[in-house]
Amino acid sequence: MTTQTSYLGGGAGPPGLTRVATGKVRDIYALDEERLLFVTTDRISAFDVVMNEGVPGKGKVLTRIAAWWFEATADLLPNHLLSTSIDDVEGLDAGWREALEGRVMIVRRAQPTPVEWIVRGYLVGSGWKEYQAQGTVSGLTLPDGLRQASPLPAPLLTPSTKEETHDRPISPDEARELVGASVFERAESAALALFRRGSERLAELGIILADTKFEFGLVDGELILIDEVLTPDSSRFWPAEDWALDTSPPSYDKQILRDYLETLDWDKTYPPPSLDPAVLERVASRYQEVCQLITGERTVGAPA
Ligand SMILES: Nc1ncnc2c1ncn2[C@@H]1O[C@H](COP(=O)(O)OP(=O)(O)O)[C@@H](O)[C@H]1O
Ligand SMILES: [Mg+2]
Image 1 (cartoon, protein in one colour):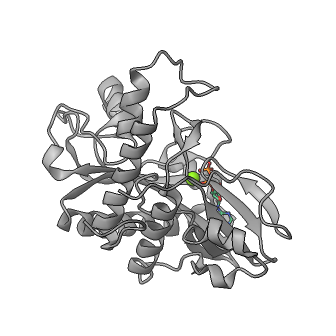
Image 2 (tube, helix red, strand yellow):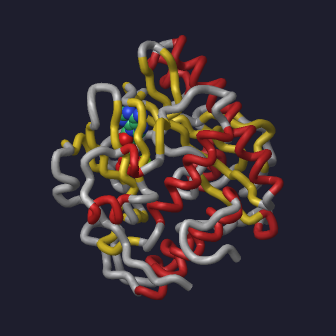
């Protein structure tokens, strides 16, 4: 397999560009009043802690997959993507071009809604916990008799607030209060339509879309899809063949890292432990596999 180093970002960034935000995974720079430069690094987080090491090529995979979906969903609603071409980023020297190529998105600057628009198709994770405790998910009552990993009767919007550290689950009614009825209704129907499109396409590839998170923003009053979309970082993808009731099926992406972390004596707070390079390599090839499956292309190496 192709050995490559990882790009961790986080430093000063390309000369002449002002950094406006540093997320767990992305470095965001202002290009002008209307446009941002999104740089997706190879940083990886687990249990909300960003690891010291990167996953080689992960940022390129996420960029490639998100760009693919932005195109495949553009008929449902407009999105923020303007270009993924490094040639459209002015003023980079050869070194920066090489470092950032494949991991940039020039996007429309939006006013993000203060909500993470999560849609769930299956009962797992925190949804399963809530259902077991009180028969609800996101405060909504569900039929009796559902089991762990059951498909939900219909995909369910289970929003949460966007916070600096841990996001807080809220009911759809609370989300409506937060963003207003008009934005809520547009975001809800867009999220459900995007979820349907995503699960149909992924089902053809033998992948179950268990749940996923969308972000929306406003540009001149228009609601658009922002951030990343239907990537392994924003979604729980299950190989269909590994799905079984009464289990928490392994997800396609970070499971390898989470399982490995569980074997260490680490309390899931900063600082993170140092990671075994072999584990990082395995995670990296998993990301490449998902990229190949969804887009038909790898970002590095020969197609399998
Ligand atoms: N078009 C956009 N305009 C403004 N902000 C955006 C846009 N798209 C995404 N964002 C914000 O940029 C950040 C993406 O960086 P990321 O590393 O994913 O952050 P996080 O740690 O919050 O997940 C998010 O906070 C997201 O809300
Ligand atoms: Mg994010």
